[in-house]
Length: 258
Ligand code: CDP
Image (cartoon, rainbow, N blue to C red; front, side):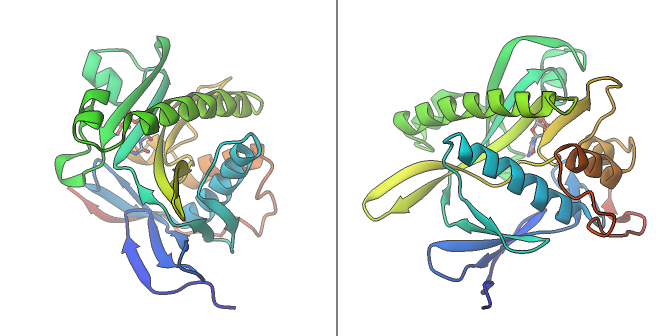
């Protein structure tokens, strides 16, 4: 059975196709890596396979603890079948330790402990550079209603608690991460579900012992081999340890850097 239909949308790291029925989509994980709103772009062989597998494992585990997600099943090395959702145009960022944007914004030092976990929202709009917004903006502009925002906050805190423990168990500190939610329609019913992906592209993950970065900062800041880092995360999660499963690769090919 052919599960993949017409191409619907091509994003920076993933392509969406029609699924086998009208309520589903096929997500294809590409090898493209982008940073700084796609100003830096390279093809890194193997990244798509790793993110597909890591995201599958995380979404499956979150489903098992009762977090509703769009994930249905993995189809092959690069593709997964998901429920079609209407994406809520927010990037929900969870920060446990200072890094990235918050250091610049507030003059904090990378690695500094935060007084408590902080949830931030950015409005998803590449042209505007995904600006940081508050819940007032979300409600005033109707990007989510108050009930949806409550659901988002409570699910996000549970996801953070679960993932912090999952990664701590394999010697990794979950510094921060970004998630997205969507509305899943089922007849007259609509509910908010976790969508998109959770992978080293969207998390900061540091080795507990050495502080080695096991995430996309390797690409953003040219710190080291991205596929080696993502493979280490996959290996510790107990997936993709067969030598033949991680594709052999050539050096990253820079597509654009200005
Ligand atoms: O890393 P950067 O300074 O661009 O943004 P950040 O706000 O510090 O990112 C916080 C977390 O969200 C990091 O783990 C990023 O990898 C992730 N993020 C993402 O996946 N996609 C974005 N568009 C922005 C952030």
